[in-house]
Image 1 (cartoon, one colour):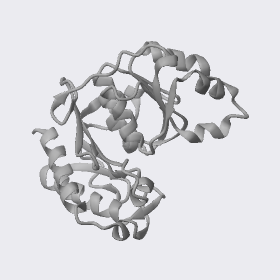
Image 2 (image 1 turned 120 degrees about the vertical axis):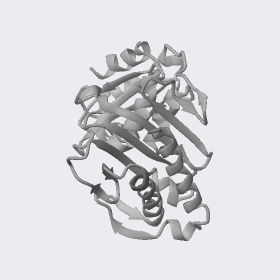
Image 3 (image 1 turned 90 degrees about the horizontal axis):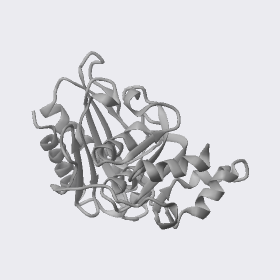
Length: 265
């Protein structure tokens, strides 16, 4: 089974479903999703489009999605993680930085991942990564940047980490060393940008990232030759069905990653 083709079909359906959605419609509130966050119409429409394709093509799977929660039998071997819209706040405020994400694994562990996809809806860019393949962006192979020093790096950092500045001056010192600190509001895209060299790194020290927000892009960074560090577990051992939250450093190489860790240790 070609899982990359299934992921691309999912994103095609999302694009066609949301194409005619106007600004008022996409921000319509539909209650609270299973993840505990506000669900907007754009979230639910994108989710329905993806789940329909997954059910048609991988009927015997276990789905974990932001709005719908867990679907299917736990005994099913294939696991599918879905974040229909990562960056919903951006989407409903017409900030053109949000994405859809999918991860497909043959089991419950991140190490059993088969394929992942991240779709930048505004730029019609699809990041794909599969086992034993070089990751691609719109079918062209990608790789991380070669930046090795913080004073020349473009790094995205979760601004909630700044809430701890008074308690942790190390973060303040780290920010002073980064040449170009950034934050875009979609962790999935920001980590994907590390995989293709647009960013040199991504930092989230808050341990609040949901697995479907970040694991698809993390897989791309790893397969592009980048460096990944989790603050509360080993990436290979992450139980993708657990619903846990994580913090992560994703960089273009271990040289840059270890420089960041030296400030946070």
